[in-house]
Amino acid sequence: MKEIFNIAARLTISFMLAGVIMGAVFVMTEGPKKHNAHVNEQKVMLGLLGFSEDNPAPESIKLFNLYRYVLQQGDNKFLGYVLPIKDKEEHQLVVIDLEGQYVAQYPLQISMSEVDDLDLRNQIVAGAISSEYEFQFADKSIFVNDAGERSAYLLPGKSSGFKTFIHMIMALDPQLTVMGFEVLEHEEDPGLGDGIEKDYFKNQFRDKTVEVMKSIKVVKMPLPQEYRKYLENDPDLDEAERVRIREEHLKDDIYALTGATISSDAVNNGLKIMLKKFAYRIKVLEKVISEQSIPVAF
Amino acid sequence: MATTKTSYQLVLDGILDQNPIFRLALSMCPAVAMTTTVMNGLLLGIAVFFVQVASSCTVSVVKNFIHPRIRIPTYVLIIATWVSVIDMVLAAYFPAAYAQVGIFVKLIVAFAIITMRLEMFACKNTVGASFWDGFGMGLGFVVGMVIIGIIRELGGMGTVFGINILDSQPLLFFVLPSAGFFVVGLLMGFFNYLEAIYNRRKLGIITYESNKSNLPGGGCAEQHSSGV
Image 1: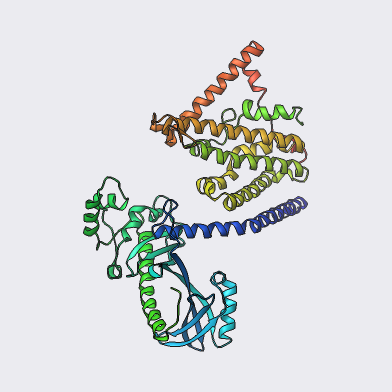
Image 2: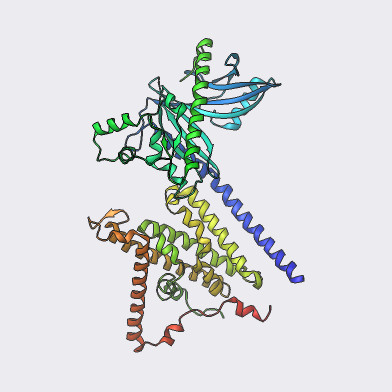
């Protein structure tokens, strides 16, 4: 009996010591880790826009973050958008009701570099709207401008996959046609569900218009050989052939990954919902911005 | 029974006489799985090296506080702590390397070679001797991984460290997992052959007994068995 207590005590002390060491290292490495994730995200975003290390983004490309908040006043819900203001280091919070009607706007004294910081942003937003609303940060979308012209949208989002959330980022052109998407983080099964990262699955979404995306679904059919070659950017195909195959499959549904229908569906539904919601919100937001003539940066 | 070997002998033992992969035939899974390129082998080898040295030192420092009946769980805890530390440091400061060997780094917890060195050596020797033993064993593992990696990468892809050397791919089969067994097997034979020649030169004879005496003896269990 005495020995059991002895063993238990020793084990407890060892585990506590191990926990302290691991915790200390975790605290030390957390900063660089976050930085890496951020750098990686930037790289993925530029990759979606067609830039790489060999082909860096020109100076004229500018990325603006748009933050969406959900505001609540009693039982009424409103949406709040944090908009960057042109040529000034400040933002504007625009409140819109659920019917899409303009409600109010508040100036936010926060610069472009500070607005990324969630805590700081929340604090400034709280200060601006005082206690009129309860608020909660919902999501962000990224507006890409090339020399003052809107050139793309980037939408980060997630969808529930086979086990956990699949974190994705989707690129849309100004007409809301899909330019592509990347998986940032997932825990799908290796060899089955992790096919969502493969080119022949990912690139099936490329060039799908907003109309096609509305009714797109996952079909359990074999991927045609020729289409697969095109999706994997096979160098054997010449330009004329690429155009022909692209036209032929422009309205195709998504061919499911073999043995991973749930993962294929998760990605498809996730992208569809992200696009559908964004298409509606951007319409409302553009209308309010032009009605109120807010000098937005993007 | 504490060791009487010098630090130089301990390190040399780890690399040649008791090389973890070729002589002790331990931790064969990573030796086969992670050696398709020299770089992968080297990175995992370095991670194992650090875990081995750190765990050996830790165990020899706390050897008097480890209860003999729970010594294996304690070793595993110590190894797991160091593996987590290496894992987090790699992820934070070497993200490119971590993307390559990330999932294998976590598996170091289960590498037989590390537990075996703690049980056979670190729990009965001083910190200094354990450090050199861990150093030698870790280095032996790195050397083994690199040798296998060079042979497989050169044979399979005609490159070493990604630099083109042969300008052709002589045996594509070498990069497949099954080739790992062949390469490890042939190298084991080669190391045995070297030892046989060495013994013949030095001692004039090769006997099984002389080989056997080099191998490590019983673990801590014997030492403590009377007290349990």
